Image 1 (cartoon, rainbow, N blue to C red):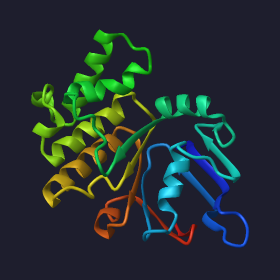
Image 2: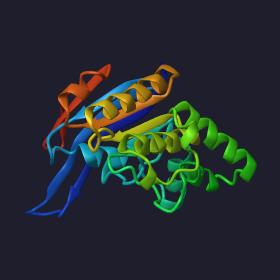
Image 3: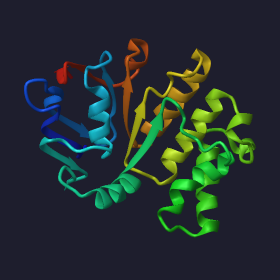
Image 4: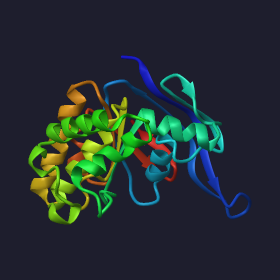
Length: 224
C-alpha cells in the first residue's frame, strides 16, 4: 500500500514563550492508503489538533505534512481549501447538517463547490445516501431524522466527493449504542472498498475495532 499521509516532526505551539503550550510536539505519523486507524487520547492529549492538521484545517508551526505526495504544510488558505474539498471527507460528532436543507440537499452542498452540474450532483448525492441506507429519507429535514440517521447523512456528505481519506471525529459520541454500531459498520464497509478512515475517539471499545490504534498524550504519540 502507498503512503497517503506522511507527517514528519510536526509541532503546533500556542502562546510561544514562558507559557507556551505544545498541542503537538514533534509528531511523526505515516498512514497508508486503505488503512482503518483510530487515534486515542484523553482531553488535551493533542488528538484534535492532530486531526485539524491532517484535515488541512490548520498547519503545523514546525515540520512537514505530505498528503497524497503533495506538501500541504505551507500552503496558503485558498489552495488549502481546494485540497480539503478534493482530498478529505469530514464526519463530526455534532453532525453539522444545515437545518433548513433536506438530506439530499445537505449531501449536495459540498458538490456545489466542485462546479458539478445540478443533475450530476443530484445523482451523486442520491447514490451516496443509498450507500448509507437512507434512500427513503431524501426529502427529510434533519429535524425529521433520528440522531443515527443524521449521522448517516453526514457520512453520505463526506463520501459524495469521493475523497481518498475520511476523518471522523467522535462520530458515535452523540449516538445510542445501536445507532453507533450502525455508523461504525458503514465506516467498515467503506474501508473495505479501499477508503482510508482515520477515527478520533476516546472510546476504548470503538478503538478496538480499528486495525491500528495510535495513542496520544501531552501532544506526543506514545504508541502506534
